[in-house]
Image (cartoon, rainbow, N blue to C red; front, top):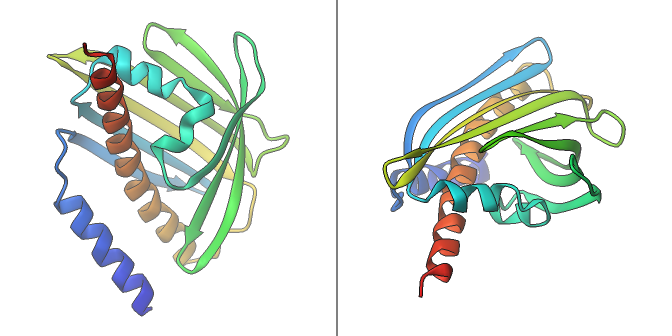
Length: 189
């Protein structure tokens, strides 16, 4: 319990001490039966082209979260099949979770990921990203719903997953912004 309290304290300090221009408009996590939903709306201090480049660099998704331990294209093509492994912890229980997703570019700055049950630790899932220019930065809308096929501890498990999803969503958005900003700096003469 001391370890958890210490970790939560550090996480709170990191969230309060954010030095980036990321602006959170809304972040919601919900659960219906066994399905989780996540909705995120943020403004990023990076250009849409840079954010898009980072978001669609499937081999480098580990740059967006310390929890992503593997990201690779299993089947290339117009709609590639991407495998990610995520180190997920719920309270004191940790495991590596595999996601197999078909990544489809729908329109300009719109991306949809459809979870494939075969090879995944999820029975279903769908994620959607939409970017738009906002001043000199980017507005990002993200929606996801997924159903784990692994056991979730009753009572406290769903609460802990929802809490973790919120923290991970913010961290990922911050890293997306940072990585896109670094790419812009590297392109500058």
